[in-house]
Image 1 (cartoon, one colour):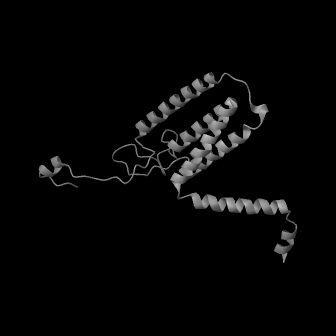
Image 2 (image 1 turned 90 degrees about the vertical axis):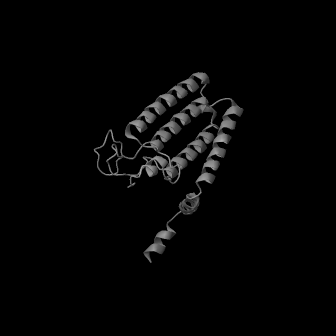
Image 3 (image 1 turned 45 degrees about the vertical axis):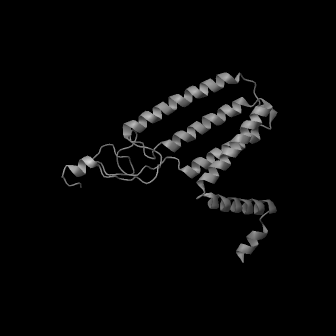
Length: 191
């Protein structure tokens, strides 16, 4: 009985919000295994945003902020969950020597959350382009050059980190092993 009394006190807006969030979560959950389709949708949203910025010839500060945010997300996507430089080597850390036990690469920012955050960022940036007060006049080539500089500097640091701790944050598929002629022709058994 108490549950029905509480339902009567819920406003129609709250009911709509709950129903909308439930349906949204349902479609989000259904989209999880469809990685290629999700990223193609994000690419379409990003293209719409780029066309909007090109069409109105403005909102470069918003684009710069979006670029910095996406770069930050990319670093989280490429980084291990437990950074060997910062954490003690226990738990889910990366192996640093050949004799270490294999531990799978676990991302700091999983692919689905990475996709969702980028898509949401492009949608928010697109909506912000409809507010003329946010169109701050700037010389956009300087922002572009600075962003490119930050991108290369950050990627260099990330790649050096990947080389130092010997991890590759990408799944290239199932690893296949082939017989080497030199090992089989030498007569020594392979273990």
